[in-house]
Length: 571
Image (cartoon, rainbow, N blue to C red; front, side, top):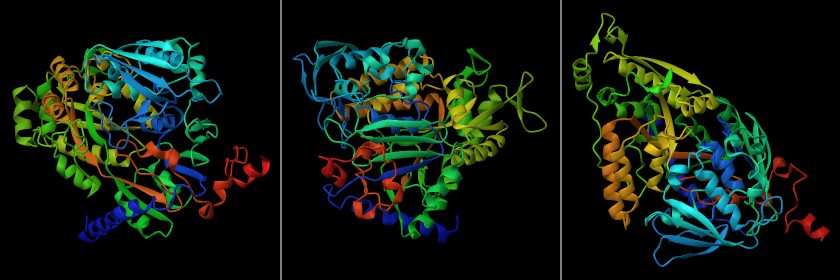
């Protein structure tokens, strides 16, 4: 990139600190309301908390449904310090720390008016752990033995062993769902049930409509037991697989928020009188996962990737630093593995498999993969060839795939690129119907979230997020030991050992960790953007009355606010 453009990008980013600090200057007591339109290139996979896997799905369900307690802005997952009451207004630990009794807020109600009860909590955890449901979060709940009900407002979590993250596992991992809505559906039939398309939760927003590949809309829950959402409504407008169309909607003023700003957009946003850039810490990273299963016969090992020596050689063929520089310029850095630098337990000194194409070629030679006249390696009549799958909605991942294709070719590996619609991408991963895929991952605040994507239990769970089917009992034990650590410093050391095992096994090529930069209309007043989820405080965003535009007053059937003129006039 020319120095002039690089300087412009750096200057634009330099503005974000001041803009971010100023986004909450006005008093939250000002008249709120308004509409937020989010432009995105991907639809949600579903809107049922135990089954949701996509970032888009999470953005929506985490407004409609609630946990027992929220991890808070400190993102501390050890003990219960910093956690904020949600459905539970208090909790009590047992003397032996093997159980926690939560007390539910007696005013909590489902969106259909029925009260939230302890039996709903018990139902949710039972559902999430039921193998017939195949919930992606099930591995994160492995230390929860059971949930009992003392009375209608007191669910009690019982644990298999003591862990520094017991409270996080119980209070935050599972969003609570109503038994009277979902309890009548056979667990194995839940994923295909039409009921899931009309979610009923307890959150500060209520579901309004979902038009697949077009629109998702939620509206403020005026009767919420704590406080209604300040925004009147949030609309996700979807341009499936079309990043250009999604970004154009934002730049043209048709949307208010764009969560995936690319370098070529930044100068235009920085110059706009109506838009601002905001950078915030991130928990996202990107990698190319190897499928350990044969996509043509999922019960058999992959003919190439079952061999760790092949995976390590392929990793050595990739110059991650040049890839990141070429695709992201200054908006990303090379990944340090299956974690992010912002996580308190991360060790940035973990040894990586080095970029060393010479060693890569020697390893492949030793394994019998010899170069044919066309330069592509062959063994026993089979070419050393595979396909990289990417979602068509991500131009960055498409560009990464093209550059990786060239670098693989230099060591005698033939790579094809398959770009598919986002929903197909998710489906192919969940069914292991791919060779390799460039994926992005939004890490949980808890480092224990690694079990979702790399743990052996997840590998045994069909439809889990362990897309590559990686399983290593040594790694599992190391993670379990780290989760049982008495302090963050002890956990950091133990997690480092687990991460080193995973990196050495090369189930993926760890590619990039992006700097999170979003675009926002200046009329939108935000709460702080949290590292693990920009949408964590979405219910506290608002548009001041004197800055509202026509679309803020659309949706006349939305109930008026308690402090609005129409509300006061009708009382």
